[in-house]
Length: 472
Image 1 (cartoon, rainbow, N blue to C red):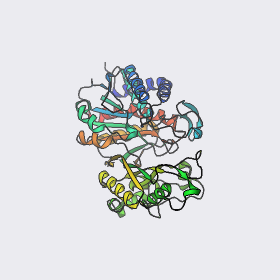
Image 2 (image 1 turned 90 degrees about the vertical axis):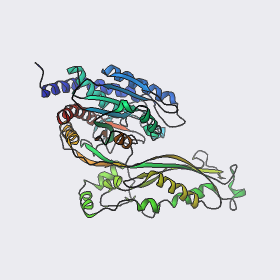
Image 3 (image 1 turned 60 degrees about the vertical axis):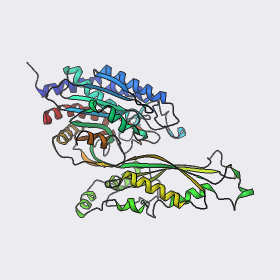
């Protein structure tokens, strides 16, 4: 006699409980691979990471496991299991590439040597990529393993895509989509690359900001010279760059590009009321971000948490002329910075990028040479959390975490979402994740709260059954 769906789910959950320590060890193995996708880091490490992910998927019982390559791109990993007739097909997404480690002296442990220790919320796993997004890979793996190894089958069909260049803007995504479109047919997308509202409080992300960026180089000399011998008549490129960057925001730190800023949709009365009701605590906010005492919170809109995904922001990600170690009495020959803008609904990425470039060129003083290099242009994304797929996700998160999830926006960008949602004819995109406000993704001491990692995996096991029930 065939088991009831509820009994099958309990068997899958029991299998997961037994296997969870193994999943943590598998995550640690992935974290040890320094799969930084940025230029200047060894591409071999990203290939090693793709191979390790492929081996993990094969061991889990997935089929058609393949490392997919495009000229000039870091490798994707694909796998599927398509033996549930009449059930929905899920496109599961995560990425295996990571950000650069940052400043070694600020890490409390080696960035690619995963360490478990107490931190905010409980025991955390520290290491680059532990949360963003190698844990996302394991959330998918844990759910698939739980069902295949307990029941011998999944309640849904699945296709997995594990990307290798998300952290550098998914620069080859359009070509990947064109070449492999037939492998990606699905009824629902499930992406495990976003954040929860707080430790123990899950969230479904329903809006993402877009991202554009440039590298700007300012030069006034062919060589570095003595500041005493030449200072005065010779323009300082570092000062010129500082003047240029200072024109990009107003006195309140808000974007000062008039055409792009005019595209931002005003907050009407109903939205103002809804955003004002969004949970926010100033003390917790300052603690989570590590804000220095006395520093202002730059406010726009009724709530800083909602502000992060409702309004654009500009950031100078890096700036360089000389260095602390080489800070002699000199006039530098050249100064450089990387500038990015996070976009919100109605802002066009190409228009914003062009305005940024034009603005910097016009703001250059003293005839200095300006060279601009485009970093990328990805648009924002938003969805309305309605329909059976979102109902299934809400139920799964509530059961897995033991509390009701929130619907939130995310200030970050996932370039994969918008083009795939369009390619799949507007298929629902369920964005969940394992990060929290203390994760410090992209910074030093990135960490994963292991208790929430477990709850995220549990929720994914349940999600498969709920999607089969609601969409089957």
